[in-house]
Image 1: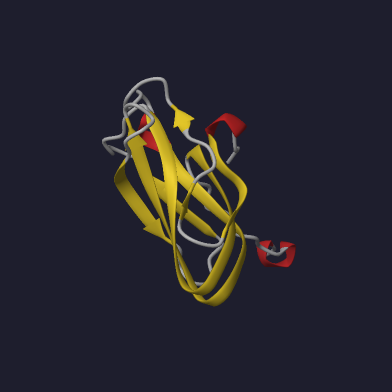
Image 2 (image 1 turned 135 degrees about the vertical axis):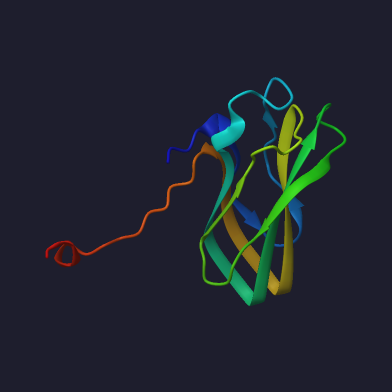
Length: 131
């Protein structure tokens, strides 16, 4: 998976409370063709607090002013990655992420981007590959 700066909404963004992504993506048109493999991918670089929770809500707008939620994904405890496929979501020209935090004194550092396909990668020791 390759991250593209022009498709990144948050780049190591620090979150201490519910907030929006630093950047908004302008797709140039509503629901562009070829979005079948498009996903919202979020990488959590840091997490702290007592029982912290994080939900990422993808929001869309036709005018980059009034946004509505089209989908969401919640971080599973222990995981550092979150992803949501955008297949058949009714998004318009502009996209942003709303981060909803919970728990006591939650703090996160996140990167969020649109990507084509989310890579399922697992490290395997060389010794495990030999039969």
